[in-house]
Length: 74
Image 1 (cartoon, rainbow, N blue to C red):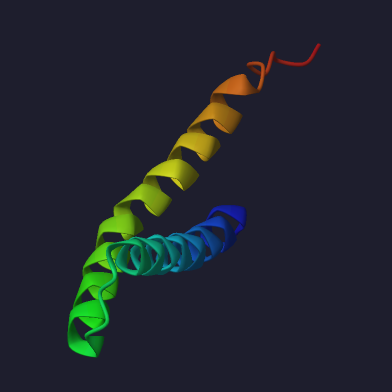
Image 2 (cartoon, rainbow, N blue to C red):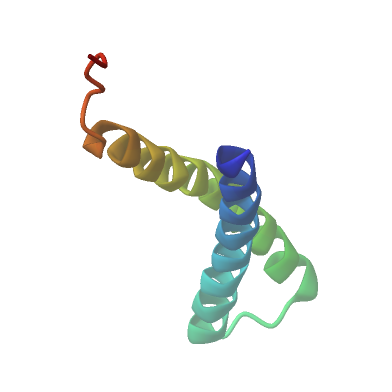
């Protein structure tokens, strides 16, 4: 359940970050054409999705390997 919630929020965060970075770069380069801005934002958001999944996966792998192994009871 926790992994599912983390993946949803990781996906939303990566899409938002991709759009934000694309918007910043387009403003920096002075691009004013709406179709170009939209196309670049879509490409940036699609490129950011695997990064979001990767970060969530790495966090959960680090969390699962950090737990000590369970020893059998007496």
